[in-house]
Image (cartoon, rainbow, N blue to C red; front, side, top):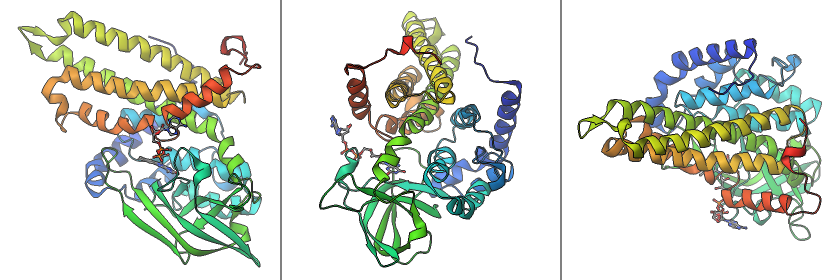
Length: 391
Ligand SMILES: Cc1cc2nc3c(=O)[nH]c(=O)nc-3n(C[C@H](O)[C@H](O)[C@H](O)COP(=O)(O)OP(=O)(O)OC[C@H]3O[C@@H](n4cnc5c(N)ncnc54)[C@H](O)[C@@H]3O)c2cc1C
């Protein structure tokens, strides 16, 4: 088995988080799936026990430990426990860092304590009905008026969209002259003109509230502009390496689980008088997948080290996202095939692995977008090959 360099403290953290999931999250998951939304209490419970947004400084209520491997553990265990529709890492590590990266001290003091305790749930809204991969095509706009901004537009497919108390919304702020002139706004629950639409019915991730959001003349004080006006597009790009690493860590964990579920099944299930695992086709398919998973996991762990050293490039993170998202689907697909009819039944976990993972090559930047990023990098004249870099 491949060695992974988690510390003793991190292994203890993993055990504690696993126990937390088993007692506080897993037992409720079926109800939340039926309801199409995770109970807000999940965030509060995780906050109480120190599993939500652990990285911010102690002065805001965090643990002040920015080592990504703690989040990697959270992401992996969430996948292994099959509660990936609880988007706690979107809240904790994908949206939360926008405050410390680009926000003011006043904004950090105002919002971070609630985010860390789980009282304030976060979302980020970029995608619109007519603009997903091509963010510059968005239509939401905000206009500066006297001492405030007025936001108009709509967003769709927003994760945590119903539960969110605070949404980072990207809008164009000079639409006539520059499609990349965007600003990020902090839109709070209850603001006049901020409405939620449908909680969208999806193929998988049934407990995740993925929603439409509408903004009709929402009046935003200047204090609710995140960072500098006009820098929104650049801010969104800056977070991408970390966001894709978060994705990759989760997708590879999901692929690992699909493999484990399938390996267990083929050892038990018999056909033609012997276990499925005795057929060479089964052995070769699982050996092939096992090899790909081990290689991908090693690359993800290497990316985590590079990230910790401040050296993970957007293109290297895109490679991890591309490979792991694709693997999460092929591992689940192989699992369904080797389960036979049982694999198509919702009562078998592999069936949900299949429907839950299908989105992985689409959101957080599709596989095609990842290939655009990677090709731009590796075909450029100043490309530095991965195996010649030190981290
Ligand atoms: C469950 C779920 C949760 C989501 N959560 C969020 C969220 O929290 N916040 C948020 O802002 N968004 C969210 N999204 C939106 C998601 O990020 C977008 O769906 C994604 O970026 C793709 O955009 P699109 O759906 O508009 O597809 P399109 O951009 O229309 O793409 C359609 C197809 O065309 C391909 N394509 C597009 N451009 C090119 C190109 N230049 N070259 C080759 N192929 C191309 C794409 O790869 C894709 O295969 C979520 C989506 C889902 C389904």
